[in-house]
Length: 256
Ligand code: ATP
Ligand code: MG
Image 1: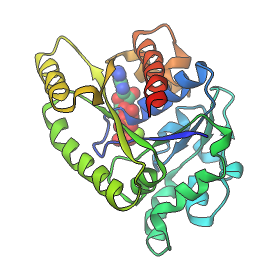
Image 2 (image 1 turned 90 degrees about the vertical axis):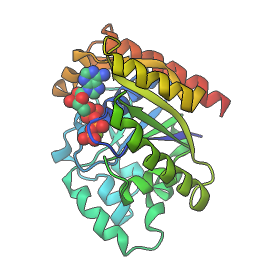
Image 3 (image 1 turned 180 degrees about the horizontal axis):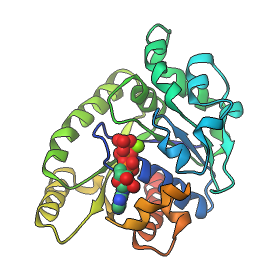
Image 4 (image 1 turned 45 degrees about the vertical axis):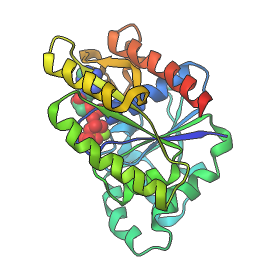
């Protein structure tokens, strides 16, 4: 039975998608069966996994709104060793269409239930908003991985996200936990980043993952080749950090 994790942070451009695709690739390279669900109309996780978002017959939109099975929406990407449920801009309309539906926040959970035994990990790349789409992700998941840059305003946004997770836990999904905070795009030469990193550890203790993802240009280049950094240049510092992060996730999940 798969463990299901959202990669979420309502702040934009903090490294959610980079984390989702590289964690998927890292886990797959360590023998795990992985499904990556793109829950963002931008479709970056889709393209970053080598799947053409414009050429998909079914996407997560059809799953959420039309009740199409994940079995018919998942795609085996040749470029990576995990399955992808693609998204494209059509998904932006799902927000509105879901509002009128019964169990609107549980559509993704119900869809995943049919494929849980096919995978060890299901990862969900959330959009940069605390929207109904993200809520579907949080309702479906056992836990949340929160990537964050160690900058001043990062901590402010974090309390909104943690409050949302607490509310979902209290009202909609008793399984939901914060699995951990992942420090990404880290540059140890910047004093402020070191300070924020220390503050994070003081406040959140062992909820902060040990692995730190450095700022690394190979991770930023990889999506233009339709590949996660871990596949594009596994030897690079950024990719190696995500390989280690995969190992840390496997270890944490064992303790869940
Ligand atoms: P959005 O909120 O728009 O979905 P996001 O949180 O998914 O954004 P990403 O798309 O993963 O963020 O990353 C934002 C940008 O930063 C991208 O151009 C990505 O390539 C780059 N980036 C992410 N992580 C790193 C890193 N460790 N080193 C260098 N560049 C990075
Ligand atoms: Mg993204």
